[in-house]
Image 1 (tube, rainbow, N blue to C red):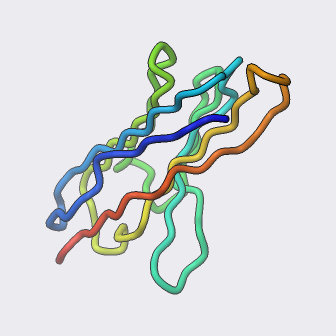
Image 2: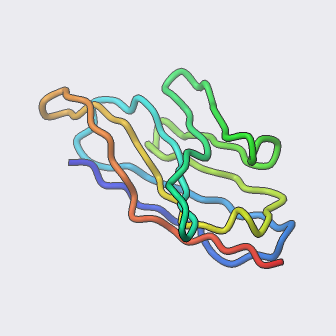
Image 3: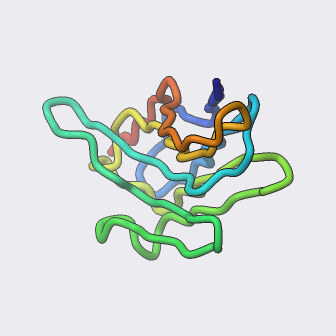
Length: 121
């Protein structure tokens, strides 16, 4: 079993910045991909950014140039630096990790508990 602990959400004014963190712990053989999704009220959950084991990153168009995803492999932690925040970025942000279990070497997808990001205008 893998546990994800998120931190860093909060309330910020438009144009401000926040940094989200998500640390994975447990019996992990390897982490294949880490990413962040978000879900605004009344909307479907969407991928915000992802980073795979080789370091390749992917962003949804609406955050390109404003958000940066990074990871610390030694700490099994993924970060999302969010700059120039807009009210439309308001959502619950969920960490997502695809990892190979150290128990049975199967690959699983894990979700964090979610952290609220609110951007006021």
